Amino acid sequence: MSRRSYAVAFLVILVVFCLGAYVGISASITVLPRLEALFSRAVPATPTPAPLPPTVEPPATPTPPTIPTPQPPTPTPVRPTPTGQPPTPTPAGPSPTSTPTRPPSPTPRPAHLFEPAGPVRHDKEQACFANYIRGTVRDAQGTPLEGVRIYAYDQWGNKAFATSKGGVDLGQWDIVIGGTPDVWYVMVVDNAGNALSPVVEVPHRQEGPDKDACWHWLDWKRTR
Image (cartoon, rainbow, N blue to C red):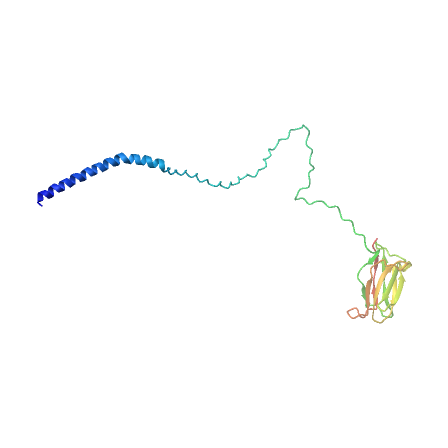
């Protein structure tokens, strides 16, 4: 076969192909809309999903409001209305620096009716032909008193009494004691034997500077 025959055959085939393509394209343009309409009737359209509701945020926990502490109102000072009455005078007290005047303290009443007029005296000048405890009783003004009763007892239980004298020996009293070493206790008593004075200790021939004394003096004085 010659080249020319091949060329004619190729040209014929090309024309047929072009016609087929034209017919196919035309048919598709005419048939496709109808097929789409037919399928749209037969197949239900896919429903469009409804939009989701918006996400609701949970309500926030309410913060309790801060309540201020009520403050009491500041009282407004009210100026007093003068009544026309004169003010009551305030008695003036003592100055803080002044010393208050105190009433004199009462003189304490003595506990005893008689008190020793001084300490016990030991006489070593008198001759020891006897051993005595002696003295004088006087009132508050110093006047000798007669009839005052004196009671003495020693550490061994010996007892002795004396009464102040009158006359030329007014107010004097004496008690004879032994010459052995001893300790005597002397007081003023009433007629019933009740003590009217404190008890005074009188050492006799005890160790010390008055060991050789044979006479011991004890004076009494009335306090009231």
